[in-house]
Length: 407
Image (cartoon, rainbow, N blue to C red; front, side, top):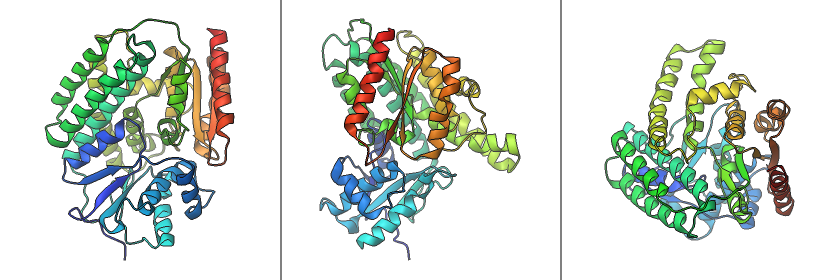
């Protein structure tokens, strides 16, 4: 019999997927009365533990996220009888669809199969007695993602140019504290979100900057590897040390892409009309938050404004059909097109080694992208427990050197 989650007994342990968004998401879940802890362990010891209980053919993001959870359970920091594990999975043909089952087998090998697993995914929103995703929680989760996207966008654009070193980090910390407190305890309706977004943009716009010419880098790739400092060997910290500006597309757009998948299936292949309607409805809900973010940025042309989902779809169709939905699908080359046209012509495509969907929609689209944008400087970058970090860093520095030569 599977271990059952109990709200009054268990603390939920979440792997650290996104460096900014995760604490916002945790606060949103706490507002529904759950206890949540975001895990931050990283390094060789975590990966070695994962490799001891997960087949090495499993994808690298599973090694990292499951490894964090196994490390937490065996570290002595938590009582295994008082915690449950949240695992995120995408559904479909991606190996990420199997994260929960991989975690379950690892727990059995460790003799910890009494630890409950709660899954978040697009084909199965939640599993586990006592845990439920309510409209109230969904509203807060969308607010959390919107706040994370805007804070990431503003910080990354201003940090390289700040007159007073640390000013952006200090202001970002203040907003993190404020927004986490709001998400956990007060109203987070769309009107409140709009007000916070406008105040946030205004506060960052007031930071004194010194305009200088920088190499601009766009980061795309598999959703876990491109965001997680653990998975990408602190890619953002390395880029900051190289005195360049980098841009990471927001998480909201990827969520929109995933939610509208059933609508694309219905349009191209036929199928379930009900799923088609639900998919479009969910996409429209996400679009309200995307629109709120865009409107907050509109009065400040110095900031990059993410395009609408419709515009992203049109960009993607220059390279791939919308029917290509495995993994990051058509949305990944759409992000590359958008970044190149926005001035971020040096592109790092971070992907797990052996990730077939990403090798197709990432590396496999480079010829077409180079035909469309001959001056673009695009570099696929594989990540795996056995790959050399020094080699990765040297390739990144080569990309930057080429970018400076073309500037």
